[in-house]
Amino acid sequence: MIYLILVLSLLMVAGSIAVLFQRTLRAAALITGVVSLLAAVFFVFMRAYDVAITEASIGAVLSTAVYFFALKRIEVHEQGNVDED
Amino acid sequence: MNRGTWMKIRAQVLPSIFVLLILCAGSLLVYRALTDEGEGVKVMGAPIPERISSRFITKSVNQRDNVSVEFGERGYEEGSANLVTSVVVNYRAFDTLLEVIVLFASAAGVALLAAPRRRPRYRESSVIVRNVVPIVNMLVFMTGAVIILRGHLSPGGGFAGGAVIASGFILLSLAFRHTIRGRLLIVLESVMGLGILGVGLLGIYYDGYFLSNFLPTGRVGSFFSSGTVLILYLLIGVKVLSEIAGISLSFLRGEEEKA
Image 1 (cartoon, each protein chain N blue to C red):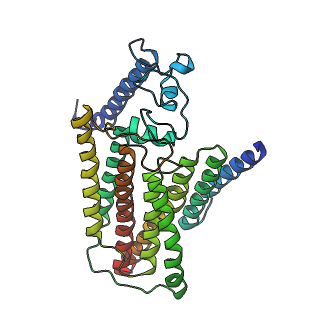
Image 2 (spheres, chains in turn orange, green):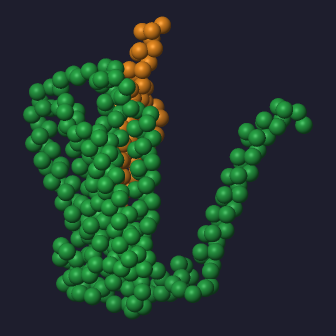
Image 3 (cartoon, rainbow over the protein chains, first blue to last red):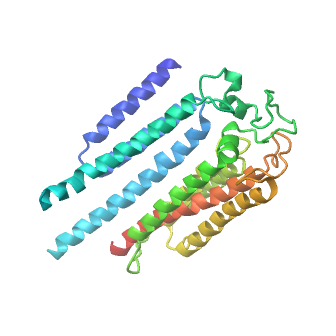
């Protein structure tokens, strides 16, 4: 049990560091979502089921979706500026 | 003192003084809460049966007796089987109301910044998405509804279930053109917010303080068992779902407008 928690937390730390070294913002947003999902599993092992449900739905799904929508808007905006120049 | 140094002071020194003052006031409040020797239940330093958290666990903040809560029993101060719910929606309901207001403020900000200005141009999604999303969404909506409605019995509640249903709406709007009107979401959100305030005011009318649990608490573990907690979690769930779906849909529509 304690090894499982150790592996999970090491994975979360590794994912958070890997976010810093991504070339594209889209990959960084995706890895942030994966870290949130690992955090949800972590909360299940800590017997905090309420927090786990909230973390899985908001951290892993909704915030990743909002990141993606925002990145899409930024890309469209930048392309529009390039076309005008 | 010339004009430049005054601008520099106003830009850098005054905000840090302000932040320092706020930090001092906050730490003073925390210090008072930890060391206060007044009436009532202590936060820290008291033996465990005297602490406020054990009052929450035995559901006897007013009654001053330390009994263990059992399934099927009646007559507790708060009847929900889920301890987290009884703290979040009953004992700390005012905190939850302000959380919902924070979410409302962020939804209003996103709607202001990301509002579509032109009519969106539509791109059809792929066949796989259009055929799979309705089947998946049945499961997503049912799971969200169960999480909201059983928030006082099992883990979950209004916030989590509302977020699950809102992710279902995001899936729907990725697959189809017409899903839900933004105006309907705004109306739902306002009505639910007024409903939460109305339940709080009814608490003042019946019990004398805001958001008090004035309905009978019932038998621990049955569906109608927690008084206003069921109603409040239903209202909070629909409000959170309309807010989060509104945030995501305003982002998405703003994207389609220029693509």
